[in-house]
Image 1 (cartoon, each protein chain N blue to C red):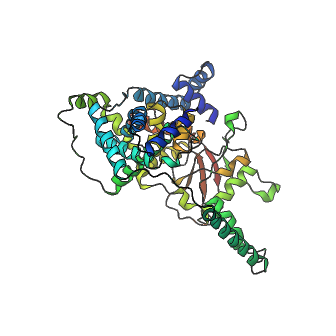
Image 2: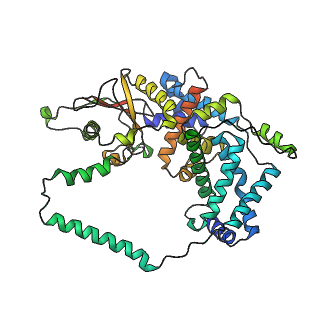
Image 3: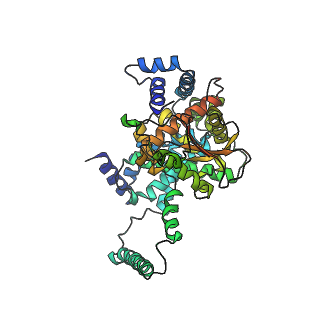
Length: 182
Length: 261
């Protein structure tokens, strides 16, 4: 059975209320989905919200998963679109940044936050990129996806993906103060 | 710079070339190539420092709990297949509409010269974002590097197809046919404005302002890459009319591809 077929079977079991199947799907994809959301949103709380929303959407629309791509590609596309939606909402209704809500009992939360932190100027540089450029560079250069996989995730041709990655890096370098950057 | 050169520079920066000779020679011989390479390298080096992000055990537990709770309250409902007559009813309705339009057209209400029908046909193609082909991926036709100014077809009677392609789109821009496809969104306006002005400067168009970027799907028929984005620009402070010069700049290479005057 192909990976896509196995994913479709798992999703069907989740739709039937199979908690074991649900846990299996979450374990396989939650970290990577969270990582994508964190690098696009730039904020851990917002990334957690986006991750939750991503999986809710994926499970509710499981019947639409046709197995043409892997579940991973399909769910990462949902993650990127969820982040785009939340970024648009943020733009329309800017709010004060919430203080990091770290559960006092979660002693590892602080360690996790620090471990995942990137230097402020890079964070700002990423945040300055248009969303479609930011997602291209997150998938390709941070998550290490191949260009074809990243292109499929974003639903664009490979050539468009190459173009976005090239221009995104150029913009990023410029922001980071490369004196010779374009 | 040509698309092949950009791909060489990118591959060199990524460290994915088996033989770096050609790429190294390029950046040593061209300041522009070296600048692009350094920009790619700077970005890649910075991004290589980004650590992986993982959920803590408590975050995972909370995530599972919240999602499962939501799913349990509003369980996922498998899509029930729609009855066959639902699906065919839409197709039948569409067929009747088409038959009706054909019947009306055949009654001679609209003449063959009617511009309306032609506009309907052409505007649906040009208003959408389309892609431009260079064909360089397969080593074929390279991206046009030379500036092509609008040719006076009256002298030779022959217009280069690529020039004609861009001239046609310049005319469509002047008549407002794809202005909406060019509009940059508010979300990315600042970053893209900076990118555009830099690119215009490199193309020698410091006194031009960018209207936006576009790709042309049908460009492949002209031997151009359908995925190359083009910056469309006009002289700063000038309103668009029939005589407005229109420039098309390759956004990857910042080469002026066509200036339609």
